Length: 130
Image (tube, rainbow, N blue to C red; front, side, top):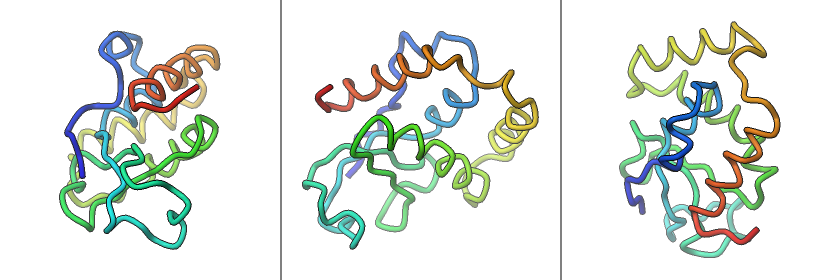
């Protein structure tokens, strides 16, 4: 199930545009449901918070990402990016923006400490413990 909330906290939405921020802004908060329990997710508790694509996330076929730690969340950012690029429902302007940001390389990325702070805020807002 999805609550439709953007996972990026309002105070972080005002920060400089970055690849990470752009990717996460295309996601919505969701919670692990019985239908989401695949072999790879059997260790996660029901109602575990995660991310779902804002464009194709409705229904069982929507692409969902469940993280067990901030480290996993950081690694899943690239998977979220690849999903958005291939998502049939993601707007062309979003895909173009993401591709341009990747082409710009390091200029598009948040400094490590800012990314850590952003992920910390998201982690807490999603209801995980530190």
